[in-house]
Amino acid sequence: MSLRGILPPELYDATIDYLEDDVESLRACGLACKTWLPRSRFHLFRSVRLRHADDVVRFRALLASAPGVAHYVRKLSLVADYAGVTADGAALEDDGWVDDAADLLPLFTGVTTLALARVRWHALNDETRAAFDGVFKTVHQLFLFEVSFDASRDVIAFLSGFPVLQELCFEAVSWKKDSPSPFEAQDEFAEAGSMHLSYLFLDPKSSPTLVTEWLLQQPGEQHLRAIQLCWRELENTKSVGDLLQASGASLESLQVEFPAGLSEEAVLQNNLSLAHNTGLRSLHFGGLNVRASQAFLSNGLFPWVTAMLSQVRSRALKEVSFALEVASVHDLLALDWARIDRDLSRAEFHQLEVTFYVSCEHDGWKECIRTEIASRLAGFQQCGTLYISCS
Image (cartoon, rainbow, N blue to C red):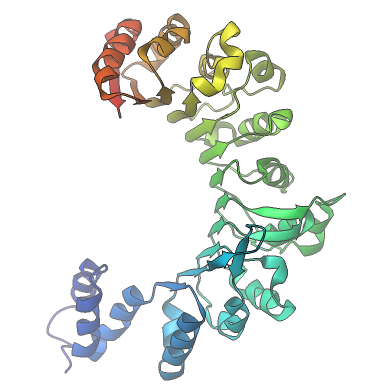
């Protein structure tokens, strides 16, 4: 059946777009009219997730009957599972099927988002890694979760293969050994392009220092707009300061966490300053666990928070949030509330919204916690809005 000429094609496309998450309806549209098929396939196959060998077999059969389907894929996810544990309790990977998918990779010419999970990059065949090179050239968003490499040099070589990368999520990535000169791989393997990250997520299970130093060595400015980082490598916090300074006025959103705590002296010595980030709109301090930060109680609880907060110079700041974990209301008393209230009440932060997300052990303390925080920030509440969420 053809509906050509009855209505403008843009209206049919808009109708099908409205059904983008309704798989059954999209299938019906693809069967109902030939002119509806491309738009229906665009939504049906824009995201492909391969989890095991059976998925590869099924998708290969689909491409054999409809080769054009690969053209519609924009997000490709290869997510392996664990097959169990070894005798010594280590996880047993089940990623051998990724090599079986190597012949499919050259068909994905329009992938802009790539996700790899629980894949041993160093264990893949040379042919498989080479097949990925073509996919890398168009990827803007990269998600890595529990991906392992042989050496830190291999991580740099891998990341340097994405010439137009814009967003990087680097979570629980590991490597067996540190290379003496890991960044030599950057010049050897880097693709010609204009890689400019706008979003960066680093978690503490990986080594954020390696990625940060790689990023800072990229030619040109990165103009990062959003950074989420959880930093445990306290001996290398200078890299954080360098990253913040390099981001400059482009940085709009920052979520930062130092789970092991950090002294105010370390903040000042390593230039962990937000003074350069004059376009900052959203600031979140996470992982503020009182019991895990007792080492700095002599200098006030979470001194790195108050030190960084006092250095904010952005007049665009609209929201600040704190994620606290407390065992009792008494735990709140160790914070330098006078300094926090003073910094949040600055004239340039007019109409600022501040949120405290507090996790406590007993429901009965929630109202007391709300009252305590509100009473400590009386000055701020005269010029801004305070929200307190207890769970």
